[in-house]
Every structure is written in C-alpha cells, then in structure tokens.
Amino acid sequence: MTILLLAATAPEIQITSDWLRQPGCRCPHTVDILISGVGELATSFALTKALSIKKYNLVLGAGIAGAYDTQLALGTCVLVRSEVPGDLGAEDHDQFLDIFSLGLLGENEAPFLSKQLVNPMRVPPFPAEHLEWVAGLSVNTVSGSRTTIDKRQEHFGAQIESMEGAALHYCCLREQQPFLQLRSISNYVTPRDRNSWKIGFALSELNAQLIHWLSIPL
Image 1 (spheres, helix red, strand yellow):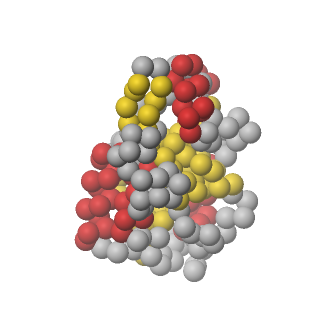
Image 2 (image 1 turned 90 degrees about the vertical axis):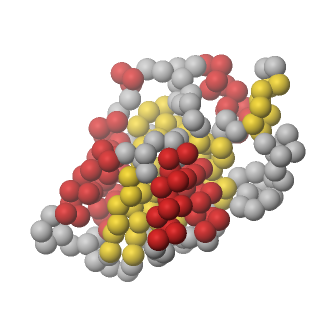
Image 3 (image 1 turned 180 degrees about the horizontal axis):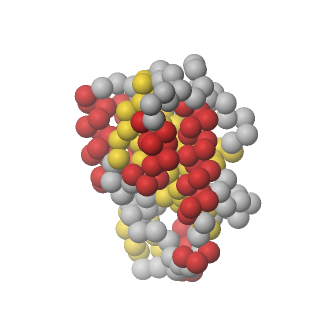
C-alpha cells in the first residue's frame, strides 16, 4: 500500500518518522511523509500539490487536537468522521453566520454533506474497532476564551478542534482520494491553560498507533 503520512508539524510524527528510517524497519508499505505547515492554508496548498504529483492508496493525516467532549480522555486516539470550517463566515453583532447561512454555499454543495465534510470511508484498512469516530471543527484561531468556546459549541456541537482537519477532508474529497484523519487528544478546549495540557503523552499515544498500523501488511 502506498501511504502519504501527513502532519502539520514534524514533532507530531517524529517518533514514527524515526522508526521508518531505522535500518531493518518492518514497514510493509511505501510511506511518503508530508509536513504541511500549520493551518488550513498551508495544508491545502501542500496536500493539493502532493496529490497533483502522485496518487496514493491512502492519505493518513495525523496530529493532536483539543477536545470539547470531556468523555474523551487525554491521550485517546480518535478517527475524525466529519469536519467543519469553524470560522469561515461573518459576524452579525454577537451572532456567527457560517457560509451556508450567508447563502454563499449550499449545505449539500460538493464536497459538503449537510454542511459537513464527511469521510465516506466506512471500513478503515487498519484495525480500528477500538477507535471512536468523532466530529471535528477546524479553526484558524484556537479557542481560548469562554465566550468563543461557548459560541462554537452552541453553533457546531463538535467533539474536537484542530487547525488543519477541514483542509485534509476538503482536498481529499475533491480529489476523490481515500483518507483517514487520526488525532490524539492533548487537552480539553477550555480558557487557555497550558499547564493542563498533556502534549507529550498525546504524541506518544498517537505515534504508537501509527507505528502499529504501519507494521501491519495489508
């Protein structure tokens, strides 16, 4: 299987990258690594360019995320079923209007489905029965105030938040490219408090899952 392993930053998949470069690495797949840069703009550009050069059996997006859903324990790995761009629209005084409410895009206009960018893959190529599928929200400015968090929860009802997920879904859906988005929960979406984040633990769990998957012949 040919796989494009995509991450916004190199540290997010450094453990896996080092493993893949080890002499005698037992990875039965051809894995290309793409470090896109942070945010939807950088990810859209880097991924579109990569897919214009080469097609893959799977694009595997990986990274950490914050969780709105406090039932998701820190360090938990999840698969993202749907994504929504969380700050694409307009403010009408205290109300947020998304691009669908503004009439700029139909809620079922490709590649959207009921306002969401939904991964159509139902059965992942890797064992994933233990992983929960979640709804993601992608933003350019990470939520860090009570006002912003409450508004986004009320409007979108997402379970996790990242800065690149919607770009991954959008590009792959437009290119009809099979993809998965794997995230590990590093923190809860609360008023900003870095002392409560568990980034190291989340990265360890994320890379353990990646290496397990990439070790499996398909």
